[in-house]
Length: 307
Ligand code: CO
Ligand code: CO
Image 1 (spheres, rainbow, N blue to C red):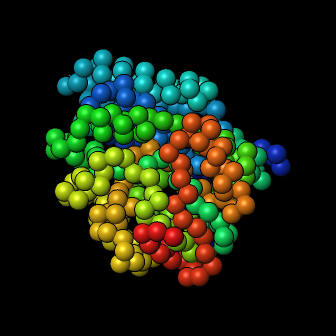
Image 2: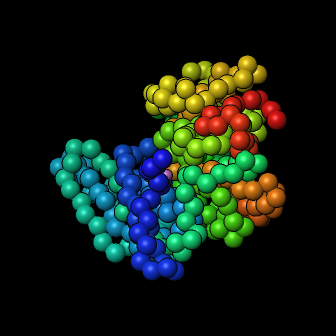
Image 3: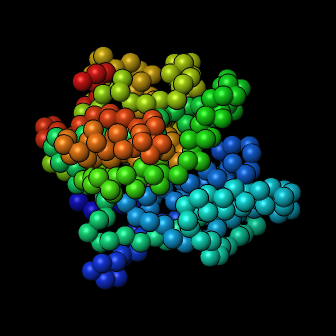
């Protein structure tokens, strides 16, 4: 089956391929500098998800020049630039258009050895699944807009969303994985479904093992649910089966649309604990093993509370 990968890969020689990706979106936080950081981290993530090394980037900007102060754009671009520096990525250009709605992101080019490309497909029965960032950015962002989330929760997700997936990707490539993708708008289970749909493997996810930001459970139980969440859940209802021990709000969280979420890595059973230790040592502290790959049922995801 032809699946859409996180980024486009083009082989130049037997040793070298380029990876290209493009992402931009409307502000999800009020602070323009932090929005710039998050948008850049999010754009770079698809290169990291494939195990690549980003090298250059170009800014993509839509800005309402007639009715917004240009200093806001300056802050956004500075936030983005800071993340590019942290990623050792060189800004080589960009393009801006006058638009009613502010949007920002990057087009990123990177490199990878053609044999080391990590695709969504490639999980093997017995693999363990590692998630490298907690879930809940969609639910908490919704609660922030309604005034229901604490300042701490808002700061916590902003920090996570602006964190590069670089270290996670480097550890993954150092230890060796079988498949990977990054968690964004379709939520954990939506992106997990992309890894197994139409293949001869399935997954079992342990809901209680999935890391979530503090307050996410309370806010989800209160009904702070972003619109995209139910679309995600509805879209995958034929692939995902929830056992009765999984609570309704837990099921919702597993479909929460993430912005600049973590990597979901499929790694052999033998290497999994070692990779997890290395991730923790590298500062990817909230990484956790959240499930495993099974040969039965194929093309399906079973969600249980515990192992
Ligand atoms: Co992606
Ligand atoms: Co993307």
